[in-house]
Length: 168
View: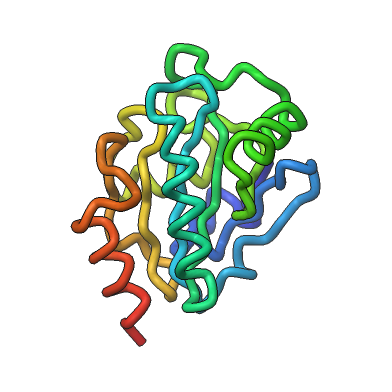
C-alpha cells in the first residue's frame, strides 16, 4: 500500500495515490479523475456499519452521474474491523450487497497512518471514528469532510454531493 509519489514530491490530489484493492492488486486512484469521489473509512463491527446500506444506495443512484464511493476498511477504532480483506469483502457483499470499490484494510490514524489518509487529514482534520466521509471533487481536491453521525441520506450530505456533481 504505497503512494506513487515520494516524500520529496508531496501529493496534491487524490489522483496522486495508488492503493491496494481489497483483492490485493494495486490500483491507481487516477482512474477516478473527472469523477466526484467519496472516501469512507469503514468497519464491519461498528454502530455505524448500517451506513453501508445508505452508501450503496447513494452509489447506485448517482454512479451514472459521476459519483464513486471508495471504501477503506480500518481497524483503528476499538478493533471494529478485525477480519481479513477476504472476510471484509464477503461481509460487505453478503450483508449490504456492496458494489462500490473496496480497498485493502489500512490505518487511518496514528504512526502507521496510510499516506492517503495523511493527505486527507492534512486537508480536513483527523478521522474521528469509523465512517468519516471525505468528499473529493472532480479535480481530485478535497471539498469537505463529514463525520460518522452524518448519514448518507442526510440533506446536507446529499446536497454537497449534488453540488459537486453539478460543478464542471
